[in-house]
Image (tube, rainbow, N blue to C red; front, side, top):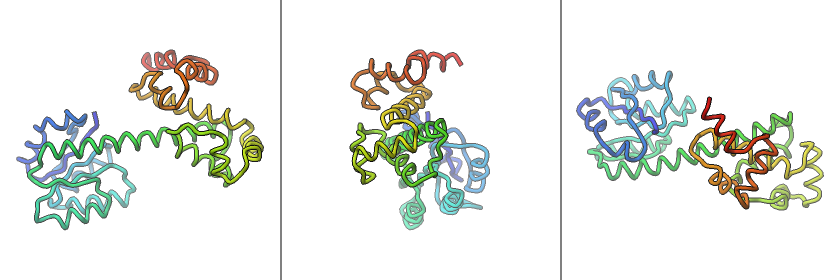
Length: 256
């Protein structure tokens, strides 16, 4: 379940929102409530949420000012506004400031469901990006390499991160760098101490480990995501790098 911070000064509306089945049907739950933006900001200093669902006009700190302060803090938590027809200009300001979306009051559950489904996709995609960036960072650290140590290494890290969902070859990444395959291979080995295929495999397995840790994927699903020809080959590569099979690795996680 994704956790929602509900921000609304009207107690009756907070009660109505809390009784809507759409939240749980879409995989969300209202984890905490606040009566205005000031209280919400105080809560957000101590806790994190997957969504802030907020009214616009509220006492002390309204929704727009709250979003502005969150933006200044580089918050990445998605914000969805609930606004009346006569508050459209406020809602537009919110979208300019980076709000994910807005809904008109009274909130229609079908439209809320549409927003939540889009938001869920957004959260999952963002989570995947973080996982692959972490995998790249972990492997580079294991090799004693800083991502920012040279333009070549930085470009390589970016390419790995941006193309994790694709199956690419050394020819593809060499072309992206503007090198021939052979010349790229030599520079890569000089910088990393390993071949491109060795580093690429380590990054894919590091990403596989991050996916296994979520508990949401089976080995064959991860094998498909990473573009392996078969789950048996994925298992073989995983064991070569980690010393154990994906199922054994997952079992250890469940024990702990």
